[in-house]
Image (tube, rainbow, N blue to C red):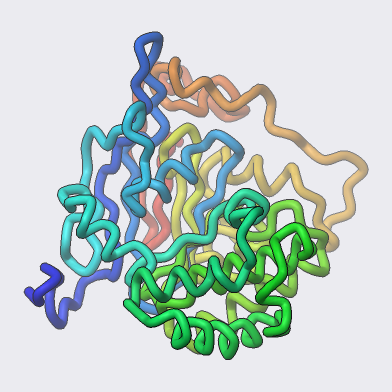
Length: 326
């Protein structure tokens, strides 16, 4: 171990999540947001976490960042290992040392991620002054150089967030996450509310910065096209579970879980002209009252008699795993 409690020369994954359960507990109900997910990310690798709204993707990311609001959120079981150290047992002081320096997160909405009454440059310099203990002048010069990397002119540093377009604000938020050169970047819906052209520019910028700084990436999205362009592997989440995971090409070319197939059937394809898309019937279940057996069975067109009674075990074909009795 080094002075930070991390394993020196560890040959294991950079990040490993094991059987993570995270709930929001109130007097009225218990919302089971994350239900036993496990995955890993190697150094330099990118993993896409895909699912509908309410699948538990952001709750999983907040668990990794140790930013679960407590109360009502609590990690009730599982391990989150970063370079061999279990983050679940970290003190708040230690968690602050890791956030920003080792693991950074691009939050979902740049409109709320930036302070509206503080110039953008001041918000960026505060990151370096807090995490890297730079002086104000040194932090300002560093930010002036780095902001050009994300395609924003340094003369905009004295402007306020409302003076930036949505795409520019997202670039600033990405830079804020990258200022301390983290080893893992978590990007939560980084292209939400951006038009297609700006989406492509932001994703290309993230790709270039990953290559430049040799970062790993956990990309949270509901857009399968973004995953196809960006990620080495993909994990499909439904009702707080990972129902399928594997190499992006494997999952896209041969989806094994009915939910994954339903996602692909509900989006248009240029190489397969159809008159009508096939939506997934029903709604995502309420995480405060999940169905018995397989969580997807009420919406599944392929369900078997045992699906409402038995939670299926994972099956594997090489590195491609899926959770289905069929």
